[in-house]
Image (cartoon, rainbow, N blue to C red; front, top):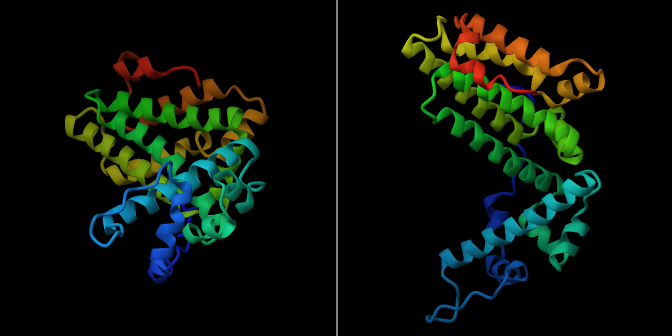
Length: 259
């Protein structure tokens, strides 16, 4: 969709499993409490060990996200994260080979929450036009609000776009798939009139990109354009292109809310 991301190199399976016993033992520094040992041999079961590792990874990301939201991803260091966890940098590196890997993981978890909102819109019983208008508004509002109210997170998203991070690419593909399914729903019901759902989806994304791409939204806000009016006009244009010429007289108009 965005054509802006490539896969981030992850640590190999060999690196993940190397010294696993030591890794599990060291992982306790990030746990709220010590897990009880199993009765057989006094060692942890594989499931318990995996749970500890996952808990530790999540705590690293919790601290990293807190720092990124406060001072930005470029200023957040492994030392900051290790200090917040009360451990050494080496322990953090057991889970993330580089700081860039942490940035990618934080980006992924934040975008996942936004994807869930998009899915929740698609799952409603509303007509396709109403879902589509609501989703486009949500995409715009999220990008604009992040830029204005959460500047460090906005800068993380800009970096993800410009540097082709895999999580941003995955997010773009998920949003594209959601949009396409909504359009297909409109085609099945006869509400929308286009020949090809895939081409229509790509057209919608291209037409609306200036209103949810972080860099383009920032430019519009800085230039002081009447962005709310422009958003509404563009959505009306998109809906007419999809064959929904009576947008203003449908339920979809109810969600043409302030941008």
